[in-house]
Amino acid sequence: MKRLALLLALPFVLPACDLSVDPPKQTIWEATLHGDPAHAELTGHAAAISYSDRTEASVSVSHAPDETTLAWRIQGGSCAAPGAPVGSSASYPPLHTDSTGAASANVLLSPILVSGQDYHVAVATAEEDAIACGALVER
Image (tube, rainbow, N blue to C red; front, top):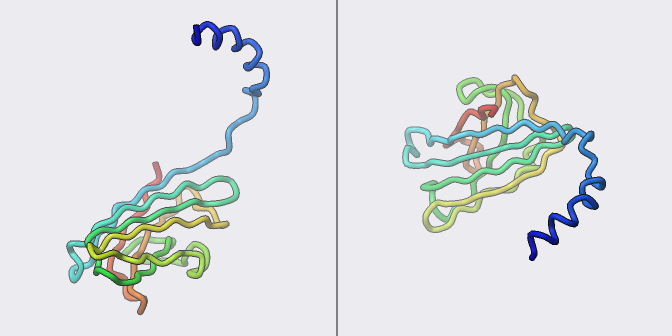
Protein backbone atom coordinates (compact mmCIF):
# COMPACT_ATOMS: atom_id res chain seq x y z
CA MET A 1 0.00 0.00 0.00
CA LYS A 2 2.84 2.41 0.84
CA ARG A 3 4.49 1.66 -2.51
CA LEU A 4 1.24 2.47 -4.35
CA ALA A 5 0.90 5.76 -2.48
CA LEU A 6 4.50 6.67 -3.38
CA LEU A 7 3.95 5.86 -7.06
CA LEU A 8 0.74 7.91 -7.14
CA ALA A 9 2.55 10.89 -5.55
CA LEU A 10 5.51 10.75 -7.95
CA PRO A 11 3.88 12.79 -10.77
CA PHE A 12 3.33 15.63 -8.30
CA VAL A 13 6.84 15.55 -6.81
CA LEU A 14 8.88 15.34 -10.02
CA PRO A 15 7.81 18.74 -11.41
CA ALA A 16 9.19 20.36 -8.24
CA CYS A 17 12.67 19.01 -9.07
CA ASP A 18 14.54 21.20 -11.55
CA LEU A 19 16.79 18.70 -13.30
CA SER A 20 18.28 21.42 -15.53
CA VAL A 21 20.27 22.93 -12.64
CA ASP A 22 23.81 21.58 -12.47
CA PRO A 23 25.03 20.50 -9.04
CA PRO A 24 27.92 22.54 -7.64
CA LYS A 25 31.29 21.46 -9.02
CA GLN A 26 33.30 19.63 -6.42
CA THR A 27 36.74 18.07 -6.31
CA ILE A 28 37.56 15.32 -3.82
CA TRP A 29 41.06 14.81 -2.40
CA GLU A 30 42.43 12.08 -0.11
CA ALA A 31 45.72 11.50 1.68
CA THR A 32 47.30 8.72 3.69
CA LEU A 33 49.55 10.11 6.40
CA HIS A 34 52.83 8.50 7.42
CA GLY A 35 54.96 9.40 10.41
CA ASP A 36 58.57 10.50 10.11
CA PRO A 37 61.29 8.02 11.21
CA ALA A 38 60.98 9.09 14.86
CA HIS A 39 57.19 8.53 14.69
CA ALA A 40 57.07 5.56 12.29
CA GLU A 41 54.04 4.06 14.04
CA LEU A 42 51.95 7.20 13.42
CA THR A 43 49.34 6.75 10.69
CA GLY A 44 46.45 8.84 9.53
CA HIS A 45 44.03 9.84 6.84
CA ALA A 46 42.92 13.18 5.47
CA ALA A 47 40.21 14.14 3.01
CA ALA A 48 39.03 17.37 1.45
CA ILE A 49 36.19 18.43 -0.79
CA SER A 50 36.56 21.68 -2.70
CA TYR A 51 33.45 23.42 -3.97
CA SER A 52 33.33 26.62 -6.00
CA ASP A 53 33.66 28.81 -2.90
CA ARG A 54 35.11 26.71 -0.06
CA THR A 55 37.00 23.61 1.00
CA GLU A 56 35.85 21.23 3.71
CA ALA A 57 38.68 19.11 5.13
CA SER A 58 39.19 16.55 7.84
CA VAL A 59 42.12 14.68 9.34
CA SER A 60 42.49 11.78 11.71
CA VAL A 61 45.62 10.30 13.25
CA SER A 62 46.40 7.12 15.18
CA HIS A 63 49.43 6.12 17.23
CA ALA A 64 50.60 9.72 17.59
CA PRO A 65 52.18 10.85 20.85
CA ASP A 66 49.46 10.37 23.48
CA GLU A 67 47.84 13.12 25.51
CA THR A 68 49.35 15.93 23.45
CA THR A 69 48.28 18.70 21.11
CA LEU A 70 49.32 18.63 17.47
CA ALA A 71 48.89 21.14 14.67
CA TRP A 72 47.85 20.26 11.12
CA ARG A 73 47.44 22.09 7.84
CA ILE A 74 47.04 21.70 4.12
CA GLN A 75 49.91 23.13 2.12
CA GLY A 76 50.75 23.48 -1.52
CA GLY A 77 53.59 21.42 -2.96
CA SER A 78 54.76 18.08 -1.64
CA CYS A 79 55.97 16.71 1.67
CA ALA A 80 59.56 16.96 0.38
CA ALA A 81 59.11 20.47 -1.03
CA PRO A 82 56.32 22.19 0.91
CA GLY A 83 54.70 25.34 -0.40
CA ALA A 84 52.40 27.94 1.07
CA PRO A 85 49.69 26.93 3.55
CA VAL A 86 46.08 26.89 2.36
CA GLY A 87 44.38 29.40 4.64
CA SER A 88 45.79 30.70 7.89
CA SER A 89 47.17 28.38 10.55
CA ALA A 90 44.57 29.82 12.95
CA SER A 91 41.87 28.28 10.72
CA TYR A 92 42.88 24.74 11.64
CA PRO A 93 41.65 23.38 14.96
CA PRO A 94 44.32 21.53 16.95
CA LEU A 95 44.47 17.76 17.24
CA HIS A 96 44.17 16.75 20.90
CA THR A 97 45.32 13.14 21.12
CA ASP A 98 43.81 10.75 23.62
CA SER A 99 45.60 8.09 25.67
CA THR A 100 46.03 5.92 22.56
CA GLY A 101 47.38 8.74 20.39
CA ALA A 102 44.19 9.12 18.33
CA ALA A 103 42.67 12.45 17.32
CA SER A 104 40.61 14.01 14.55
CA ALA A 105 39.50 17.44 13.41
CA ASN A 106 37.51 19.18 10.67
CA VAL A 107 37.87 22.58 9.07
CA LEU A 108 35.98 24.79 6.65
CA LEU A 109 38.32 26.98 4.58
CA SER A 110 37.44 29.81 2.23
CA PRO A 111 40.34 29.06 -0.13
CA ILE A 112 39.67 26.23 -2.54
CA LEU A 113 42.05 23.50 -3.65
CA VAL A 114 42.63 23.91 -7.38
CA SER A 115 42.34 20.85 -9.57
CA GLY A 116 45.69 19.86 -11.07
CA GLN A 117 47.78 21.47 -8.30
CA ASP A 118 49.88 19.58 -5.74
CA TYR A 119 48.88 19.64 -2.07
CA HIS A 120 49.74 17.72 1.06
CA VAL A 121 48.64 17.50 4.69
CA ALA A 122 51.24 17.99 7.40
CA VAL A 123 50.89 17.17 11.11
CA ALA A 124 53.30 18.94 13.44
CA THR A 125 54.13 19.38 17.09
CA ALA A 126 53.31 22.62 18.87
CA GLU A 127 56.90 23.68 18.08
CA GLU A 128 56.05 23.35 14.35
CA ASP A 129 58.24 20.28 13.83
CA ALA A 130 56.53 18.11 11.18
CA ILE A 131 56.03 14.54 12.39
CA ALA A 132 53.71 13.19 9.68
CA CYS A 133 52.80 14.00 6.12
CA GLY A 134 50.77 12.71 3.19
CA ALA A 135 50.14 13.84 -0.39
CA LEU A 136 46.57 14.86 -1.16
CA VAL A 137 45.54 12.95 -4.28
CA GLU A 138 42.71 14.22 -6.42
CA ARG A 139 39.97 11.61 -7.00
